[in-house]
Structure formats: structure tokens, C-alpha cells
Length: 553
Image (tube, rainbow, N blue to C red; front, side, top):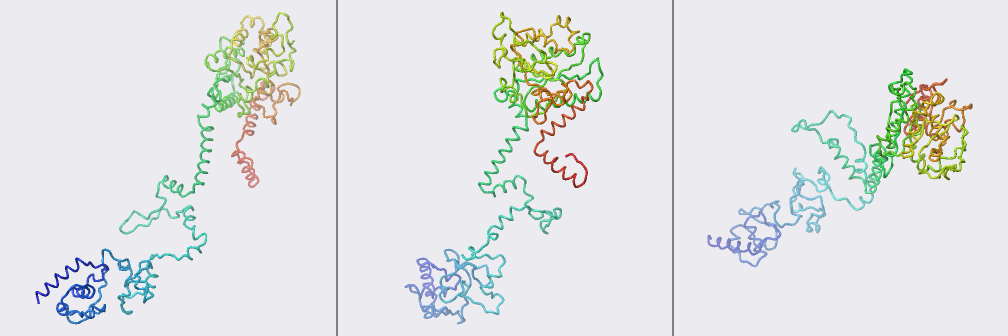
């Protein structure tokens, strides 16, 4: 008997080695079940006596009957143990009690022949009273979080909100009503639950950016580029450098001289109104030059010892122009402004307002407006043709002095001079102490009278002098010149948005501070931004109608 068992065991090992079990059906079965299986399927000799001693019904095994007998003749239980290795998916372990799969793709094809249940558990069916008995349909429905493949009709019949609910809900803002109360698990105290607000700002921005479509991102990039360019070129120092450069804006070619009596003169003490005028005038010029890249030179016009004995306070304009030209060697034009002037339109640059079209805006024939009755042009035969011409040589490059005329003659509250050899000669003659010593008692208008004298008697002065319409750089308030209160030649016109207003002669029977204040407020009103107009013209008006109170936003 022992020899037969040894011989059968050797044959069985050779059989298993040469004929591996492909389907894994006998995994976990007793040795006698394996012997019966191979005895019925293979042409290998396995002693029948060995099988009979183990209690196996060889004929039944050969017929493929599932009934196997144990050593005592009792039925062998089928072991629901799933094989490993190269096995079909239908025989892998099922997560449901009693076996089975929620996916039809994992079912064994053998079970579709005789049964409608798509589960490998059909080969072992527990009793219905058993606590582990779970029907296939109930198990698929009861399993928490169980997922199954939707049918084709289900995916096609979904509505718009069913398809895009997640995308719509994720794009909506999140509100945390109880932001100080956080849930914490017992084993993770203090950590709380995860919230998207815990993400850093950069992470949230990147997440929101990645959710946008390509067209939306391109549109947002275009809007960002426009806004960034607008901010960089109009709200940073870059615009000042750009407008100041000689190759782009050309702002360094212009210097504004503001005559400010900062310390007060020996002839008059300055009061609160005078200080207020000076404060507003200086601030007005500083804002203008910062916008267009010009230079601003604030000079002290207080009466000093070198001029006090002669009352030569107004004449020092000539001396200050010389100093400014030496201080700014790149400057080509110098614009003198008195303290009681106000730039009404800061959006006008000197280039666009005057110098880009200089030949068109100036007139060189004084006969167009000649309040002093100059004889023009000169008729002496010894003069050259340019000196006898009403317009000189007619070239704008030859113009070195730009000024205006009011109802009384030349007005030097606002005028331009150009750096040139001709200007150096004019300043020397203008500052001539001999002429001043002889004529200063007759020249009541200070520095304006000697310039008029030079223009009327010197042909070389007229050839390089040109005039601008007064309202172009030197508008007067009503009552400053002429008998009428609204002369279109001299007085400020709101409809035409005049560039500069000059309150000339306000010391005589007029309120200087009142005029400066009114024109300052008018300039602000005319140059409001869209946001300021919205606040003042709409919001403030609605608030006044609702409450009856005026508010300044």
C-alpha cells in the first residue's frame, strides 16, 4: 500500500508539472479531488486502488459529477476560495456578501447559459434564511457609494444643469457664515475640515484661471494689457520721462519761470489772501509741469537792495531770465508767468497748443492789432528787405520773442523767449542802466515800457518778434481791460476753453483772491474725470433730492 501511494504521488507531481491547472478550479481542494480530476481528464495512470482507498468515486469523477466523497463517505463542501495567478476576472473576490459583481463585464460567461444572475456566486447558493444571504439586486442597491456604468439612454437624456451643475456650482462664490467654528475629528483635534479658503491666494487664482476657456483667458489678458499700459503711461513717473525726452515728448526744451514773491517786498506786507494766491498758483504750475515733463523755476521777486533804491522790482525779470537760461542749458524756450496767472486747461501741452503750428497761430504784422499805433513796417531805404517787410523773413525759426497785446499795449504777464544770440542782445539792451536812468521816471509800466520803446525804434527787434492772440496764453477776467465786461478779444471765454487766465490789475478796485478762487474751481469743474462727473452730477444730485442736503464727493 505504501508503495502504491508513493508511486501515485510521484505520478501526480509529474502530472502537475507537465499539465498545470489552467483554470484554477481545484485550488484548495483535497488531494483526492485533484487525483480524480486528473484521472478523468488526462491519459495518465493513477492507480484506482489509490483513489478507492481515499473514498473517491472514480466513475462519478470521470462523468464530471460535482459530488465527491470524503474518507467517511460524506459529501465534500465546495470551498469558496478564489484562486490567484492567471485567473479570469469572474473568479476574483467579490466585495459583496455571498459573492457577485455590480459590473456585468466581470461576470463569467458560463452563468449566462442557465441563469439570469450575472454573478459567479451561483455555484454556491446559501439558504435564504442564512444571515449571509443577500440577493444580487439588493446588494447592488444597498452598497454605499456603489457605482455602476450608466446606460446609453441615461447619458443622453440628462438636462443642461445635470451636465454642467458641477462647473456652475464651482464658479459661484463661497460664503462661510460660521468661520470661527470648525469641525474636528476626535483623533485629529484642532485640524478641522478642509476648506478651499485655506488655499493661498496665488493657488486660488491659478485654479480659477485654469478653469477658464482659452478665449476667455485671451480676452482677460487683452484687458489686463490695456489697463496696465494705461496705468504705466499715465500714473507713474514713466510718463514724465517719456514726455520729457527730446526724441519723444520734447518736454526738456521748455522751462516755466514763475515769479513768486515768497518773502514779501519792502513796499507791502503780505496777508492771508496773498499767501493763498501764491499757494494756489504754485500748485497749479507744479501739476502742469509734472504732467508734461517741463521744468519749473520758481523765482523770488521780493525787492532786494540792488533794486530797492530804484524801484526796479519789475525789471528784474530780465536778470532772472538770464540766470534760468544758464541753469537749464538744454532749454530752448522760456515761458514767463506772473504769480496771478492760472493755467485753466492742464490737458493742453505747449507743443500741441502753440509750437507744433507756430507759423499758423502767430502774426508778425503788428497792424493786425496795433493799440500803440506803431508805424509798421520801416520805410528807410538804407534798411534791408527783411527789415522793411511787415513779416520779416516769414520763417518761424527766426521768431525769438512771443508776446501778446492787451488794450494798453504789450503785456508781459505771460510771454515766451527763445534761446539765441538775438535774445542775448535784446536782454543787454533791455537791462541798459543808461536808458533806465534817463527814462524810468516816464516809464510807468516798468519793464513793459522799455520793450515797447525798443520795438518802435529798432528794426532788428521787429524782425524776430511775433504776437499771439491774447486769449491764447493771456486771457483777462471781465473788467480787466476795456469798457465792456465780455470782449472776445481780451476776456476769458468758457465755451472756447481758454488756456491761461491772468488777473491783471486786480489790485485796483478788484478782489484778486476772489477771482483766483473762482477760476480755480471752474478749471476743476471743466476738467473732471468720468468718475468725478458720475459722483457729482448723478450721485450728489440724487442725494440732494432725497435728503435735501448738499454733499461734496
